[in-house]
Structures are given as structure tokens and as C-alpha cells.
Length: 592
Image (cartoon, rainbow, N blue to C red):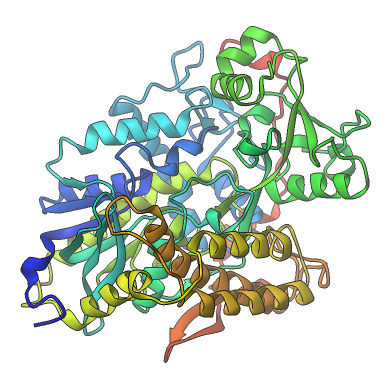
């Protein structure tokens, strides 16, 4: 009968499709699955509307050609492939570039209030490494508007929403995923979901680092649970470090300063007042790709030309004050409230901050299907689209394009299978033992201190610049922390107990970090976000032709490679030409 004697001991729900995560990808997947006429459950760790998608502020990349008519899906495809250093899955990138405009127009149809051109079309702004002005935006609050629009659309579809629920294990029947188990965060009550298909849309894992733009939710739960269930992961070494996060005061360190600031004409300066991007990318300057700009700031600080708190200056004071307040309202409010700085009159101090995971669950480009039957993934937790470096703005269109596809595919799969007669309770018992262990443990480890040590390890040894020596040190430390995490002790009960939540998060994060570090050790070259100081050059002959795969075999983490499928000649030809970016002065974009 299992540890509880009977199933009544925990709350149980049954759906055709279960979507885990209620950010942009999860909401779009749930809308798509509901449209197929199926019963859909949507689970979120926080409250609906609090998802990390709100931090994607600058815009949604889509080749609408409203501002630059010469733009096309082909150019967007080529920009994305080049940005990803050709580690991307070209099939995924082609679907993405072709379908992004439709998904943006659909969002507009559902009520998204985009900024407009004088002709009434959706306005588009420039962003780093995009050849044309391509980012459809709502000031610098685009992610918030996307989330609001999808929520308004979604809640009328008849889906059931479960808020403040953390799911900690995917349940299987043979090879197939048939449910998920976890707890309600408020009272610790265990909860079981039975489902014919599951879409994981749990976002990234930035909280494994000390300085990150990510929210408290970003602890890699969905990724780690999928890995434990047998899903393959790829590109885990590729962690995007955004060039510009807040630096001062200490309490706000890492909070994102959107790329829209540079898209609107912001300039990066060192302590000597030099516009230093001229040294690193004289053509694209501040709108170079994120890996290039982040490394440039790192090198300026290393050379002794950093700002007082170890960063660079980001300056928009040359722009009209009313324009700044209109086009960058969130940034204006953010600096005024958090740093007592008026960005219309004073420079912002910024430094690189961990922002996004290019790696994740390996999925089929067309369907979002993982390597485990019944399990699908979309958004940041799914890998393949961005390769070695994501272009700004591609994340929001990623959510829309592949959230829809994953939801549709999960629904189609669910229609072909039945619910299993019963859930194997031994899997639930095992997870309950893991969840309750901190209360029963005689150990002395503190979950917060384990997390702190892990963040220090990743920040110091697995950051912008990496070496074999430091990566090996990081791996040793992570393996040590995995052992120590077995002895975490938590006081009190499951009611309102953040220490207990952190204890389970620690196990997820340690799994994620082991995958990042083992993959980073394996990739003996520098490519995109992965900068190996001991292997500073790209090795196209070896590492340019493979993705690095992480899988669980007999309880151990195993690293291997899979070959990258060669691009067809017509698509490869698109990536050969060097496009001339139509950069414009801030003033020439007036009429925004």
C-alpha cells in the first residue's frame, strides 16, 4: 500500500496534459493543449503572473520588417545560427525564424499593447547581433505584457491552475512518464498529478550562481526532475552571462539592466571615460553579442579600468530625458527606487550577471518531445535553439513558438494513450523519503549554507572565464556538497518552512551544477558563452560538429556527444554572407 497506507493521504488530480511552469512557454503550451479539447492542469511554483518571463524586458525578436522592410526570416535564421556559433539545431532555428512573426501577431490579436510606428504598426528596436531592428516591444516591460496577455487568454480556456506548488519528481510507468509528485509550498501537503503527457516549462537555473538576474524560482527543478526520469540534456556548459546587471548598492547586485538601454542608444564607458567597445567590436559596438560585451567589461575591469564597484558605466544622459522616461520606464524607475540615481542625469554602474541557460532538455525541434515518451519541454528549460549564445529578444519568441508546438504535440500524444491503471507507489515512497529526510536527519548541515557555498563555487570557478584547474576544483566541491546535502537538518514542520524548500532545491541545483561543470570540462575550446582561457580558440574540427550530452546511466552522470546534423546547402548559404546592420542614431527613431 505504500508508506501512507493509501492514496487518500495526499491530494490527487488527473489531467490529460500537465504543464509544469506558468511563464510564457507554460502558458502558451497550456493554451495550445486546451485548444485541442483536453483537460489541462497548469502548475506554478509561485503565483500566476510572477513568472520570470517578466525579466525579458527589451522585446520579442521577429522578422516583421515594420521598421526595416529588408528584414526576413532568412536573415533572422542566419543571425541566430551565427550568434549560437552553429551549435544550434538548424531545424529548430528555421521553425523559430519562420513562425515568430505569426506568434507575435497572434499576441497582438489577443490584446498585447505594443509600441507603435507613426503608421500604427508594431514598433521594432535594434538589439545586439541582430542585423535589423527586429524587437517588438512594450517600452522596456515586454515580458510583463506578454505574460499578462497569455494569462488573460489562458484563464478563459478552462484549464485548472495550481499555484504555489513545487513538483519534485516525474512518475513513470515503464519508460513512459505518467504523472508528477510534489507538495504545496504553503502547508507542505503532498500532491499527486496523473497525466497522459507532461510539458516541462520550468525555466532556467540562474540561482546556482551568486550574481544573477534570475528570481528565487530559478533553481532547475524541472531540468533535474527530467534528468532523473531519464531525459537527455545537451549544451549544459552554455550559461549566458548578460553584460549589464546592477552593481550597487549590494542588495541589488545582479538585477537586470535590459539590453534595450543599449538598443535605445546607451553607451558603455570605462573609468577613464573611454567608449571601450571600439576595441572589441568596432562595427557593432555596444550592440555586439552578449558574450562579446560581457567579456569586454570583464577585461576592462581586469585591466584596472573598472568603475568603483568593479563594473562599467552605462550612459544614456546624451538622450532627451523625456525619451528615456518614455522608452525605458522600468529602468528609470528601477534606478531611482533602488539606487537613488536619475538615469536621465547620471550614469548607471553595471557589470555582468548570470542571465540565461542555453542548455537544457534535448527535444525534437518540431514537437518539443524529450527522449522520454510522454515528456515534452519548451522555453528556457529546453535546449537546441540558441546554441552557444542566445541573441537578446529570441527568448520571448522562443516561448511563443515552441510553447505552442509543445502543447499541441503533448495533446496529440495524450490522445493516443490511456491513463495507467495505477501509479507505482514505490516511486512516491522514495520521493517522500527524500522530502522528509531533513526533518528526520541527525545531521548538522544547513540548507542555506550549502546553497551559499554552491553559489560561491559556481561564481568563482565556473563564471565568465574558465580553466581546467578551476573546473576540476568546482567539480570536487560540488561532489563534496552532494554528500553533505544528505545530512541537511531542518527544524519545525512542513508548514511555511522555507528552509525545507531550500533543502530540496539544493539537491536539484547540485545535479544541475554537476552537469554544467562536467560538460564545461569536456568542451576543450572557447565558443560563445563558454570561454576556456586554457583553450582560447574555437576547435571547429572536433567541437564544432557535436553537442555535449548529459544522461543518467546506472545512477551515474555520463557525458558523451551527439553529432550535429549538417545544414542543407541553401540554409548554409544564408549564414555565409555578412549582413550590414542598419544601425541608426537614437534621434532617427523618433516617433516611437
